[in-house]
Image 1 (cartoon, rainbow, N blue to C red):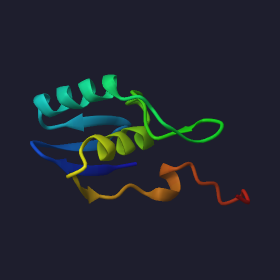
Image 2: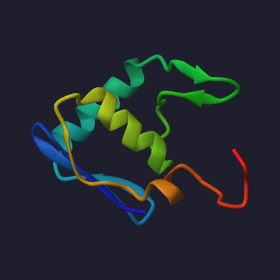
Image 3: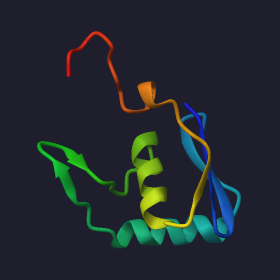
Image 4: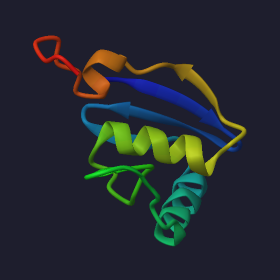
Length: 91
């Protein structure tokens, strides 16, 4: 799993199962915004827009897109593995 997103002041990357940012200031701002964000339930039982869990690639990706609306996705994540899509299941 890998993605890369350019935001004002820095670049976020998801690699080796963790979120990395090339700017300490941008990462600090991001974490502060996560603390203030109240997750919105999109669908029951457990689908929320994003929360403060940065150990999950999907959550980190959605959080970056939500907190930095003027960001640019440089490398898109693989959607099949990203959203735990299982081709053996009928959705």
